[in-house]
Image (cartoon, rainbow, N blue to C red):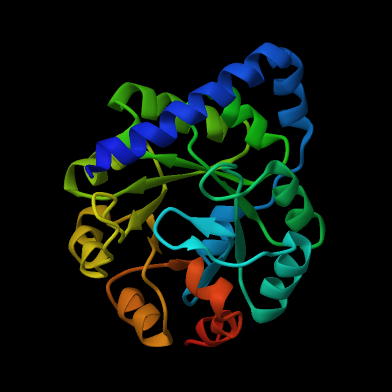
Length: 255
């Protein structure tokens, strides 16, 4: 299974949801709502001293299958108590079993900045995200250079932190050219779902100057320390934290 095949499947479903959003929403009104929604400083939280932890609320994934049932408010509050600096909430409904209601519930009980984790493929979705979250995920592989730069610019315009996710050298260069200041390196190979922390170690030197988030594969404090030594400002933990909530406290305690 190729990366393009996996991402194309998700992108096609996201496009259908975007078309429905456009049909049912006045984008001018949505834009006004975005500008009135007070954002929390996601990028600032990641830039704080030490290794920041982004804890993810995720019931399922294509690689892990069903992980566990989770009340997003309960888990958001738990992650905040455990020392996470930001939350990530899956809103993709089909393979990840998430929703915008999950995002609202988690953000509503914490003071943490929250990123909406989804497959954003339409500017209307950027605006939708800006009415209820503080950061938006933009996967570089889904965009050509001009489009990615436009989405990054729109996110910044409406007060969101755009987190641009990359998987290889070409995408790393694309992220920098787009103007992204927060860049996530996904250690998971979407061709076969294998995880290699060496992906971050290989790409980090190309991304000097950006705030770097290491995504996927963090299961122990040793993993997090390794990525911090390689230049990560933050680690995003999803499945491992959902299976072992105590992991977040251990990661947050790292010097």
